[in-house]
Length: 404
Image (cartoon, rainbow, N blue to C red):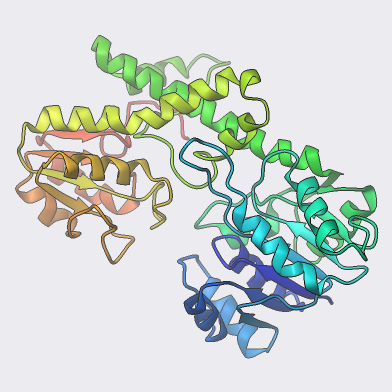
């Protein structure tokens, strides 16, 4: 087994570190947040993910996983730091560059640097150039193996998907890809597709841009239906009876770090060649405001119950959440809100105190379902005859809709 250093203990880095340790590797997890370092060393996860606490406790007890604030020499160094976008939709790689700078002094011949963070096309080569400048005594690549292996996980299923999902492993050279694949073979049962780093970058971004474009079409149908007096969900259900049509369900927008961000990374490399991606982003980015306008128009200043703040069902992840954007928009307009989010303990900034669902809907004039949490299914009877805006399609789904 190998020594592995995982830089960044977030939604991808921490589950990956725990999984590697469970497979017998000696793992050091690094994070600049001292609270995260302390919780990992205590065998506790700072984020909610099924079975992660159990895996962390076992790994810490066995002495195969510990955390620190600075990286140490290892056979494999995985970079899993955040890569957000700037307000003008440009990739912000400052944290990735900082991570590269932190590992440069500890690099040794034969080690393998793997970028798991989502990055724009060409970023792996840029990181290699940065390392080469910081360590002129080492050939990067050559003495050092460098690869990009983007994650493909769904929060709430991260551990399972880290093991089972296919992986695209892009090396700066074929030898780099082969070396990185050795690590993934130790815990991944899914197919491993070896390619070059630029292809791996492009593939990951294409996957989420594809999803974004398809979601945008469904959301645009919802916008059109509202203007034309047509139930868009019912129309989509009927259209999906066509043997070659499978339209997604519309929602309040697009959230999470991947689908709401990755299309911008893809388009950033050649903006004039990506009009469709820009159009889809425009539809999905403006959808929360469209939903907020509909809620405000219906409420006319009366109390509104908002069901859900997370970016997807049955988790407490608020990253880029359209539901949270809607809640903040309506709060800024001064509407009296009753906010429900069963998967978090504290309200995020810009949102009033959280309430129990039945308490929230009791005196609400308008009830908006923003997230299709399973817990809200039990409210169907209580919502009968109430003024409901079902932006998530949970309480009153269209008849015969395809399962998406």
